[in-house]
Image (cartoon, rainbow, N blue to C red; front, side, top):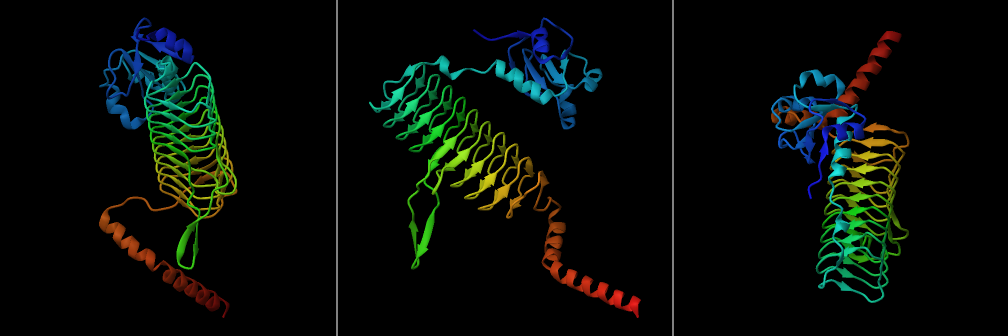
Length: 344
């Protein structure tokens, strides 16, 4: 049966102001561009103004000051982007609606599984694994020995959970994720690389989101630790012995070097690189494509890199950058000469 809510019910849930058809049935959410008459969309970006009047959505969430410009059904709320996610959760399909263990799953007799739970086709559960109630393990997942998975956690298809990993409750691990991978912990001796044995594990907190194809390495000396309610996007690399504080968000393709310590409530922009052994204080924001090579001890917004520009202009500026040191030396020399002249 399809879930549906009237616009009045949604307005009451969001403590918003309803404008238009209170009895309109909403059966899902979508974008302004693709929404249909039985869906609700969100407008929170002026760059989408052209879509607002062309949308086919049955209703739109928008800010109070935008209501007068929208002639159709809507709900005004202080934060439309936050509100659309609250509405989206109403239509979320709970994976535990599927229950049972697929006949092709391979489960060690020493594993401790607590129902209700769902284990899909060709999943493999290792020795002494403990799985709490409400867990969903997708098809072709590999859960190695001595893993603990907390209640209502979802492991999506194709994920690999390394031996000894601890995963908290209500966490979502995306497809293709590897948690507890062997660390890049190599030493060079007499011209040859040698890999040292990893002694640490991996600990993932409650309500953590780990996006598809992200890799989190196990600790080499102590555990790699991901705090409560951390949000990690797709294709992120987290090296060994890293600590990430609670409520931190990391966008796609970021690289976190070994032994990095990231505080709580931080935001790491996409494709950023944080060098090994760096420490970030709480509430640090790193904008996208930045390189962080030293510790940041104060909260704030930090950036590096250059903005995009027309190609020929960029080439000229790149050439000037190589000569910047000479320019500074010449300027310092001129300033010193000016000071000497003024004193004479």
